[in-house]
Image 1 (cartoon, rainbow, N blue to C red):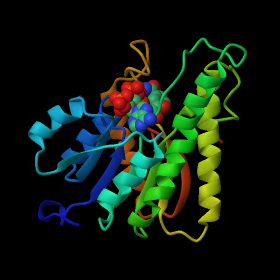
Image 2: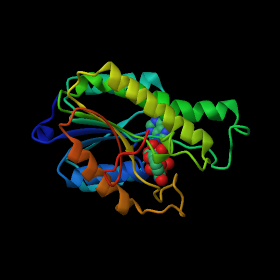
Image 3: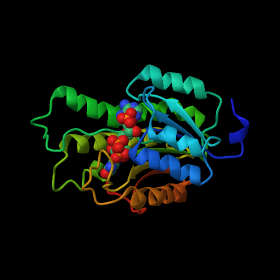
Image 4: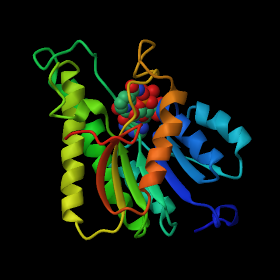
Length: 236
Ligand SMILES: NC(=O)c1ccc[n+]([C@@H]2O[C@H](COP(=O)([O-])OP(=O)(O)OC[C@H]3O[C@@H](n4cnc5c(N)ncnc54)[C@H](OP(=O)(O)O)[C@@H]3O)[C@@H](O)[C@H]2O)c1
């Protein structure tokens, strides 16, 4: 069901908007006049709830853990009948940076792989029918997901998870070759968030407004692109 206040606005479903890059993406799209459905996990108050104080009419908060198929299906059922101009899956996790494939437990490997590769694609598959021709489906990848740029190593498990994500999105694109929608894998740069840490090169303000400009420049262009926050193509 479409509510009156959103009808003339572009609609964004933003998965993983409680903090960090997701929260900043929510704010950017609100500032640009979009109606944002931002998701958090669980019932705790988050910074997205603080943001809603200022954007009551444009921001809806939903809950979903993308690793829980029943929660993804329930969110889809709640949004069924709505038209989404864009679905952007930002949610992601990393393991301990120092952990190599020799050290990582199977459980931790599965957690990172499932959250960063399987669950984003399952989410895209689930919401596929709500994004019309000309809409955008985007996933937050990482420069670390580039196989060909991996010459220095490090971040082994995280890299593998984002490379798997990229391959799954390429497979999705190949399966929907005649699709007129824009498909994006995004590399935001190394950014100071809980995940990036205080030593990361970029502030959120140096990454996210630029990344949104890049996304907006692609709208209406069919096919899959793997782009960084400056609009440059990242090698697969
Ligand atoms: N920061 C960087 O330098 C950098 C660089 C390249 C790519 N990225 C990617 O950018 C994205 C955001 O990163 P960030 O730096 O903002 O990380 P962050 O500060 O750790 O935030 C991660 C976000 O993902 C959500 N999330 C995690 N697991 C989830 C799940 N199973 N279901 C739903 N939501 C989930 C978190 O929700 P909770 O608050 O509930 O935990 C939070 O909103 C990730 O995909 C990351 O891999 C980040």
